[in-house]
Image 1 (cartoon, rainbow over the protein chains, first blue to last red):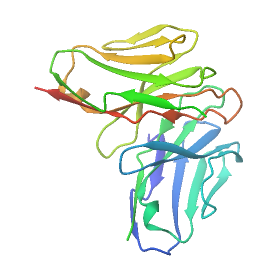
Image 2 (cartoon, each protein chain N blue to C red; image 1 turned 60 degrees about the horizontal axis):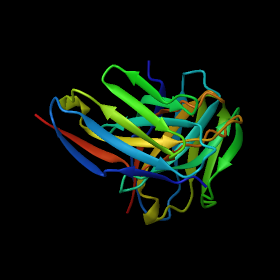
Image 3 (cartoon, chains in turn blue, orange; image 1 turned 90 degrees about the horizontal axis):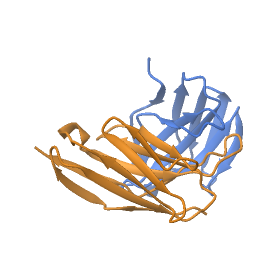
Amino acid sequence: DTAVSQTPKYLVTQMGNDKSIKCEQNLGHDTMYWYKQDSKKFLKIMFSYNNKELIINETVPNRFSPKSPDKAHLNLHINSLELGDSAVYFCASSLAGMHEQYFGPGTRLTVT
Amino acid sequence: GENVEQHPSTLSVQEGDSAVIKCTYSDSASNYFPWYKQELGKGPQLIIDIRSNVGEKKDQRIAVTLNKTAKHFSLHITETQPEDSAVYFCAASRGTNFGNEKLTFGTGTRLTIIP
């Protein structure tokens, strides 16, 4: 009965590689988000999608490309990974206009 | 854009005592203020929230107060228990359109309950 799920939970990769993180929600929400939490625990929004349409793009490098195949899924693809991309990435979802956002368990990305 | 400041960054409280965490925000158009609890290795969990048309909200041992004039809001936890130990985040949002409910987070407070 997981509400917001992410895979993988841990991702270790080398600089220059391309990787993807997947997110799925079964809450019937129509808006999904990606947040980045750095080593100091600071949480910052990256993207939001509403009904598969990109709504928020917070000046994230072009190497990050979100994709929403349907309302229940929002994936994050990262090209040419850099050391500074190491962080925990959280997916979240909400019902548009209702504010409450529910977060997934996070994906810890380590770039070596 | 919105800026949310949170204090203190760490807080140690004796079990059974109360804990208070305070946040200030900069955007007077912000209208939604949630609090999240993040346990080690887990995602943030929404524990309580308040909207700008309300001054106070309670849910069992936790309460949130909002002062719109001063642009600050606070989390109060009473009768603290060891399981309250976690990192707490405040956030603010001004979204009114579809998909525009962007949360701006505070920097977090690590709360430790001393048995």
